[in-house]
Length: 78
Image (cartoon, rainbow, N blue to C red; front, side, top):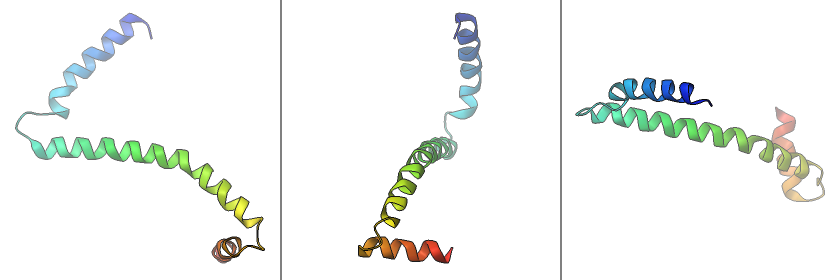
C-alpha cells in the first residue's frame, strides 16, 4: 500500500472512530465488540469447514469401524 493510500485510510478511520467507539455509550461499544467477535468466529468457521468435511469423508471410508457407520447414516438421510 502506498503512503498516500495509507494516509487516506487512516484519516477515514480516525473520522469514523468516534461513531464506532463513542464515549459514554457502552451499549454501542458492546455491539462493536460482538460484531468483531462474530467476524473472527465466521472466519474461523470458514477455515474449519474443509478440515471437518475432509475428516467426515475419511471416516466414511472406514465403514467397518462403528464411528464411520454412525457418521454415514445421518449423511445418507440428508
